[in-house]
Image (cartoon, rainbow, N blue to C red; front, top):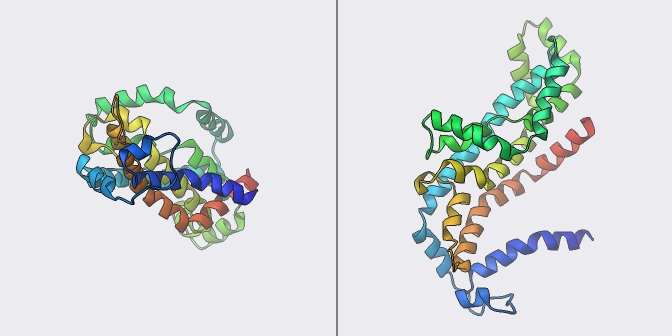
Length: 261
């Protein structure tokens, strides 16, 4: 069953790559052919000429880095405050904070768009990542880890004269690296694959990420599927490599967060 599940998960990516090497008639023939008759790389060359592909990849990279770094910094600070600090109304505030997770993201698009418009950031790369630099999910994930750490570590650091910020940075944060890695991978994948928000705030191809830019390859009456699949295959490689490199941290972080929840 595990092998069957792996095949089902990998098959769409394999089909995508094989379609990129097919000709246009091959890609739409019925019944479909699994392997291309002749392995042609024209679609990969055409996608780089049809779109400012490298510039869009750069926008996707900036969007992903901006969101990921923002989540790691701001969510870790908020999570540490909710987990280790004592202040009036903390539990009530955290419950209200978590209620944001029950609000569909689509409901927030209009107010976020108005804020970005008033800031004069429409059709710009910062508009892509600013709303995603903080999330209730990231705070919840990291809070579970901070709560599992022994209080004796903080007490020993305070006896040595360390302040709250020093304890957070030098003592507590290194101990939650699995959770930070998990949050980084999850946020990176969400950011790289995000489609709706970039289409809402950007109409300029030079400010679009690759996920939104690929939609311009879809025609109203005819779509060149080999070119579209070639672009999708190239666009998916960075996240595939990232996941393979950080798979151990990703699985460990999700497993531990579930056990602490």
